[in-house]
Each structure stands twice: as C-alpha cells, then as structure tokens.
Image (cartoon, rainbow, N blue to C red; front, side, top):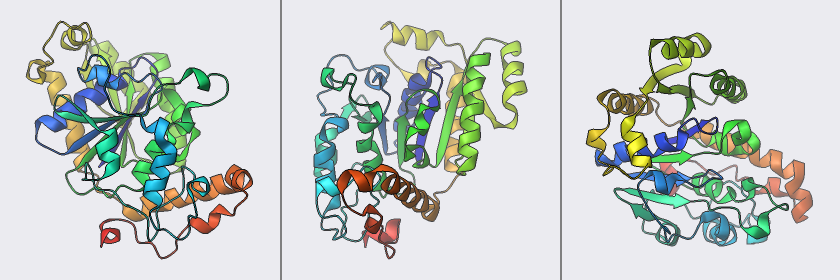
Length: 317
C-alpha cells in the first residue's frame, strides 16, 4: 500500500509520517519511507543526525530514467522520458526494497526504517526551478513499482495544496491529511478534499495536537465523517524533537499508539486498485504531453502509452 501524508505546514505531517513508518517497521512489515517535502526533515524525525549518506532522487532523475526505461521500445532515450512516462512492455519494474541498483544507491536505513530522500534545493536551483522538478524521481519510482500485499510506502509530501501541482497525488492508495484544530488547519482540508474528490482520491483526516474536548468538537464540526482519528498533544514527541528521548515507540502515549494502529487498520482495509492507478498515470501523462512535454522534447509523447501493458503483479511475469 502507498500512503501519503499531507497537510498545512507545521501541522505535524512529517512527525506522523515518521511515527507511522516506525509503527509499521516495528511490526516487521516491509516499509519504505520517502521524504518528498521541500524541507527534508523526515530523516531527523526518524531519529537520524547528520548526513544520511544517500544520494537524493532529485539529483539523479536522468539516471533513474535510463534505468527504468530498460528496453521499452516506446522510449528512445532519457531525454524522451518525462516524469509522467508510464511503464510499458520492456520497462524495468521494481519490487519494494528489491535487489536492484536504484534501491542500492538511494536507500539508507534510519533505525528500523529504510528511507529515500528527494533532496533539498541547491543554490543553483534558486529562482530558476520549482521543487516539483525534483519530485520527478519519486513519481517515476512509484509509477514503476510493483509492490505486493503487506508492503508499505509512506511518503511525506509537500505542504498544503501544493501537492496538486503534479500528478503525484494520484499515486497513492490512501492519503492522510493531518489537520490541527484551527481554522487554518481545516481550510487546507477543504481545499484538498475538493481537488481529491474530482479524481476519486481517497483521503482520511488525522486530527493532531488535540488538547481537549473543545479541540475534538471543532474538528468534528469542520471535518465531519472524514475525521478518522486524532492524536493528543505529545510530550513524547516534543522530547524526541529536542533530543531528550531514546525514540522508543513503546513509550509513546497510549492514545497516540492506538491512533497509529487505527491508521494501519484503515490502510489495510483499502485494497489496491491497479487499473485505476494505471489509468490515472496514463491520464496525467497525456495531460503533460499535450500541455508542455511534446513541445519541450519535439516528440509525440502520447505514443509512449503502451495499450497492451497490464499493470500489477502480472507485469512481472
């Protein structure tokens, strides 16, 4: 299952991405965490200090394209491949944390959690590039990933509705929107809900930093049935963020540990819809091809869609 965490900046989505990834890993489940936020704090939230030592995806998009296009005859070169190019017959497909050069190069373990990072803005990017150009590596990875039952990819996304600036938001089975009990917190929810509904993207709201009944009633009033669960204000999280704890998840407040279990139960109750996932990938590729990519490459990139490609486990045979 592929899970995205989104929300207003400062809502706690990075913290919850880390907590949920650790919760899954602690159970023995195969899990990969991906930092797709411009601020790149997921490694720190997982308990890592210093340089991760993993080459960021955003700095190696061209190499990723070369690897993933494989022998697909519809993709002549890395220059002809854009971030939305869907897989076809001949493409190199990935298994989660598989024995391949992409995982070997870009994944590093932080505690119990394997992690990939998109990378920060370089000085050369300032004023001339948007962060979504770096997120192309994440989109290509998810497009070519054939993950199986009981496997999890957890992505910490960019803040707010900025996540809708690319088709990446359709690459997930479930999106958790983290909302503080404030008007600003729920305003992002409304914006995300309306965009997601247009594409059939499933969302569930996690209330965060709840301090009492008034906060919970506020969330219920403004979010309604989309409110899945909530986490209370956490001294454990604050201590961890200040470097005053051992990051032992067993010491997390009982209510918050229960909330993480609710998240997993909800994820597991939403089986993968491979045809819908691939349909969205093709739709956004055609949009991008006609909007800018055909002109940028001088090619008709709509021809990259392989009508005989069967998405899902069958494609591995």
